Image 1: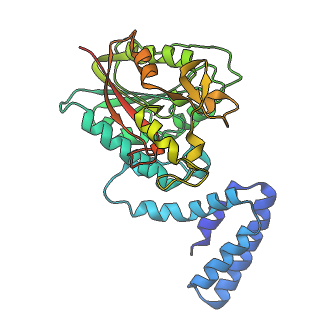
Image 2: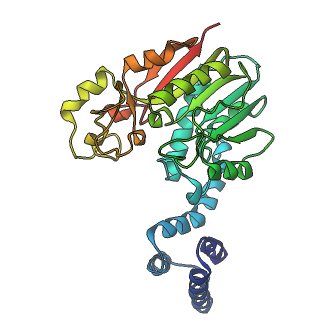
Image 3: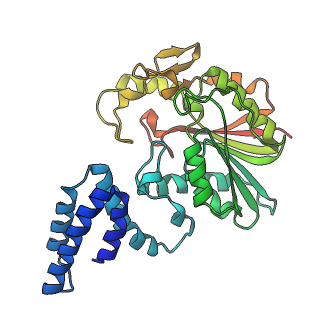
Amino acid sequence: MNFEDVQKAVDLFSPEEMKRLRGYIEHREQQMEQSSTIVSVESLFTTLADIRSKMDVTKFLAFLENLYLPYDKNNIRRTTNLDLIPDYSHRRGGKIAYAEWAHVIGIFQTIIGQHLPRNDSELMWLDVGCGTGILAIAAYPLILEKGKYIGIDVQRRDIEFCREHYPASLYEFQHLDAKNAVYSPLQDSIHTPWKLEDSSVNLVTALSVWTHFDQADALFYFQEVDRVLKSEGKAFLTFFLLDKEYEQSLAGRSPLQSAYHKTPTDKWIFDQYSVSTHWRHPEWAKISENAIGVTPTGIQQLLEKTDLLWEHTYLGNWKEKFGLFFQDILVFKKRR
């Protein structure tokens, strides 16, 4: 084990924690030099157990990742974009594990790639609610030769991170000064238009964004999708779609963990009305925008004042059956 990597990892901690851990590491290094240059498995686990006793769980997980991931990434052979996955402290949005980020990146890269036209046209990709860039990473091989990704988010810290982390030659990030009850309650503006020209992008994505919109926000920003999309452009938006499959799943929901995801199945019962009968939230959601479900009629209401067509649905595994993703992925296409 290379203890220089351990010393890099402890930079996650406070000066006092770093001082204590560096002293411990130096002591362990001296022990190793006196015995052998090879660290046994037993010695490795003893070292990690001792370090674990000196910090909280979150910091320990970040510590382990900083030791492991550089070696794991060196073994990636069949793709390049996974090198862009942020470290533990910058992975947010309901998905923290490195493996789950890689999983979701692969899902959306594949689905979107299959829907794109087979020509040499430039791909202009708008990602709404980009967070720290999970779909920015999915975009990388699709925009590498000819294209651009634009990420928008209401959280300034995420935008600032993305501007530092992703290459400016391919990526642009914009902070949206708009209020959201969950993610930006202190921002005052409502229904802030996106800073993009009409008909300027041919792809819009939004991963777990409409699941945090009330009806008014959902309607306004769906019209923004319609405004910025070019003719025949597509939008991939995720929803909790309260359709027949959802209704059929209700009888079997319970406090037990799902076979398809690691949350109780009864957590996703949308039985509280959010202004409209077609926008609903679970009882546990003290702020309704923590989790919003929409009925098919609600989706049709979104479509009414637009030139968008509801083209396809990929059902999510939150409905207690196999699905490509947790939430439902709805694909919309703009008319000619």
